[in-house]
Amino acid sequence: MLGKLIVISEVVTFKPEISFGDIIAAAAFFVAAIGLFLTLCQLKRDSVRKRAEFIISVFNEYIADPDTSRVFYLVEYDRFQYGPNFHGSDEERHFDRLLSHFEKIAALYYMKVITRDDLELIRYDFVRVYCNSAVQKYFAFLDTLPDSLGVSGGTFKRFRDVAAMLAADEKHLTTPRTHV
Image 1 (tube, helix red, strand yellow):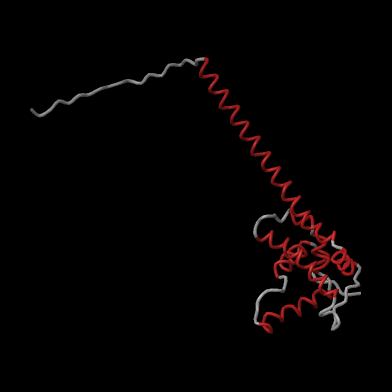
Image 2: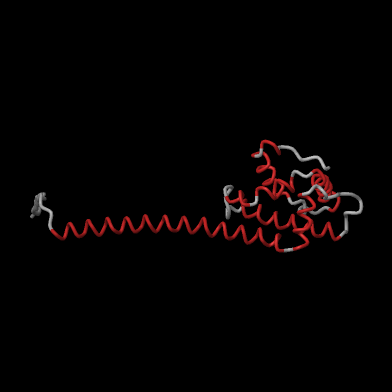
């Protein structure tokens, strides 16, 4: 016996009818889609708010510290002096702490935790410090340390790169300011 070929043919027919259940299912899908969209919008707003809170908290760390705040104002009012007596002084320690706070913020930018738009919150402070000519002299000194010490780091490179990027956006502050 060779076998039998059985052909089962089923015809699919389309009924142009919409049942009440179909309407309820479509409405539920529509409501779920709107809910998902609104949830995504809320998550995005919360993400922006949390990033802003985070950067402000890091920013406030240096503002709340009287020593780093004082050294920032020395730069702000062009009274920051870099010279032979600077090394090993309390002022150097406080200034390094200020730069360390800025370095943390710049690191967050490079880690993509905060965005370039978030940096607008601290643009002024970054640019004022970076563009000060006495600060540039200090950076020139720091650039010699990795070679002389044989250890990389300690030059606040991320802060300097981010501050240079922000300064380049400022047409009137594209080069370091002269010390008055």
